[in-house]
Image (tube, rainbow over all chains, first blue to last red; front, side):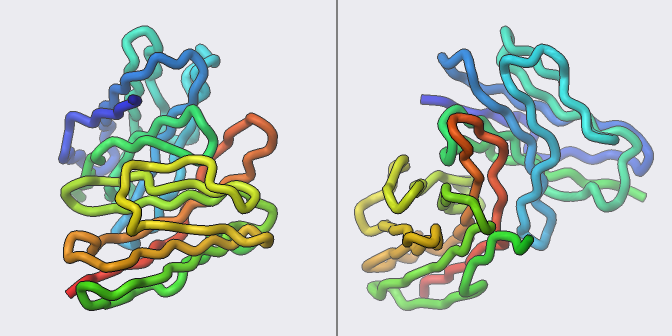
Length: 113
Length: 115
């Protein structure tokens, strides 16, 4: 069974600084997708960034980027120039079969002004 | 385009009762998935429906069931409610074009409280 582990239950960052959230996963599949979702207090899950396993290039979306290490089964999220609006719970998720995603337990990110 | 709509947003039920939650996916999306989110267990996959058929199922007891209609709208039913069923129930839809999975678009959830 696939598992996703987020080892940092809580993280904090100073506004305008950079923070990295960790995620590791376990799978025997070779083709899959990885995602980072953000869940603010409103509870609306929002996709932050996605990575296809067959792509070697790390995905980037504005201030958000990932460090995808397929051999190590690691998928960390880097947030640059952190903003107050980035405060939320962040979930790492794995998907190999459309419609069924496996989520980590989440990391609560606090942004300090 | 309207997002994923879940109704109701909040629900309070008594132990032993049953409940039905509704999810309207984004127009054109044929895959609808359901998740249970609790503070202690995180997000747990319940099941996924595609073209009115259950395609994937998580490890939940038979009290949890669902269905999907021809317009892709989905309902989730929980019978004989237990206190432990109190949770945020999230619905997600995805286009599922062929074998290419893009992302899941989530609704705002239904907060179920069992008393």
